[in-house]
Image 1: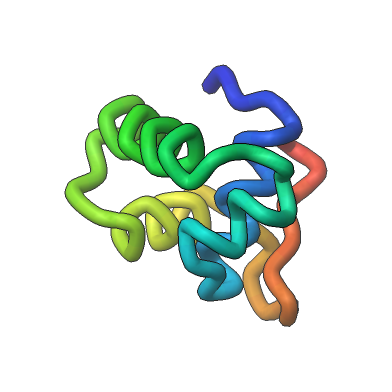
Image 2: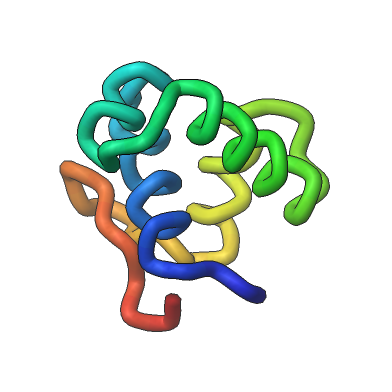
Length: 76
């Protein structure tokens, strides 16, 4: 699995419920860049939508289960 720190933060933000606009603002990127990155992550992990992508990360214990707000596991 090839995720950089920014992708990891993006997944955590999606799990928290952030919109594309809010993610873009916090990562200092354009909305279009964030949308494109999300699209690439969906393809990379064979997910059809954001909810499925977040569920994939929880199912593979790449996000800490039982923690709020979501955070990434050390295995990333």
